[in-house]
Structure formats: structure tokens, C-alpha cells
Amino acid sequence: MFHAGALFREAVRHDAKALILVHNHPSGDPTPSPEDPQVTRTLAEAGKMMNIEVLDRLVIGRGKYVSLKERRLGY
Image 1: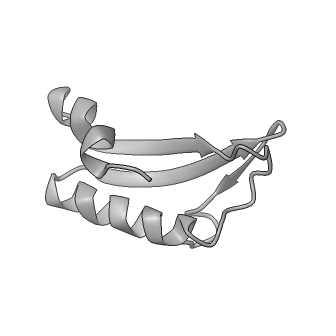
Image 2 (image 1 turned 180 degrees about the horizontal axis):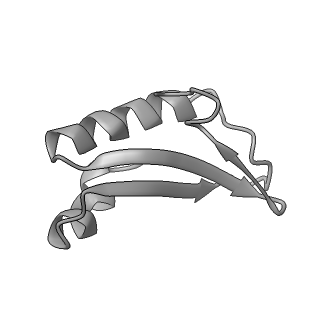
């Protein structure tokens, strides 16, 4: 479970215009979960309401990463 407000709080406080979001999966596997595209879409929409662009969302693990934007998941 996540709360978009908590993610954007510091960005708003610092008048950020854009963010790159990064998270890991407890398994260490950076393959996006079925929920990741929907969460990304929700975060991007929340950012738009605050004039903060979500440039990308990365999943990291095992020394690798997956860009949801490159894979067009949630964008």
C-alpha cells in the first residue's frame, strides 16, 4: 500500500517540477509486478494535478533495474 501524498510531500515542499521514482521488490527481482503499471499511472496523474511530472519509475533489484517508462507500463 502506498500513499501518493507522502511521496509528493517533499517534492511540493521543494517546488520540484519533476521526479524519478524508484522502488525495490522484496524478492530482489526487478520485474514489474502486475500492479506496478496501475500504481505508476496513479502516481503520474497525482503528479499532474500538482504540476510535477513523473519522468520515470524504476524497479531495482539484484544489481539491475527496469524502467517502466521504457517498457511503456503506466505511461
